[in-house]
Image (cartoon, rainbow, N blue to C red):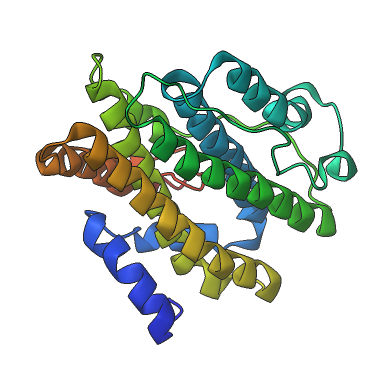
Length: 258
């Protein structure tokens, strides 16, 4: 752990929110030099998927039709690179800012709040995507597609299927994913080379804010006490983190070693 007062203060609510710490066994596996490529590749994909998840939320719940197209255009260079092998680190440079205004639906009471928080989150996630790609490029690690871990799917499989509970559950899940990312960056940073360690520490503030934004939106939209629902997903998240997992990734559970 990076034991500075500022970092400890930042992480305190994260530790209170999460129902377990990352197992030491995961840290030991993640710090191995041979596992750096998979950590960076999965981190890269996590940044894109976090941005996509936020984009889907505001497309579905918060913006007019023209803005939906603008959001898709914003993501196209990243999705072309990731899924279609089109483009390069050079073509992605400076693409993390959206070029058009995003307009709220007039009939949704929480549209603007959702847009404001999620657009900022998307900008940061896409910028982080590029920063991870830079680190990979500097180390000669080529991009390749890797399958997703069980983590996000395991959380999403417990969502309710009626609104607004579906949206509230998605926001709670988003909070746990961001909080766990923050905790793992902090736990892993001391064991990595200085450039990656500094990068991971630099991510803590934004990841901590993302978790808080997701949680506050869930509480605002629910308009009632959702502490039991938050605790429910906390238990599921902790089980995914603590239980044996043969597929080592950034958000995987306790490694099963051959």
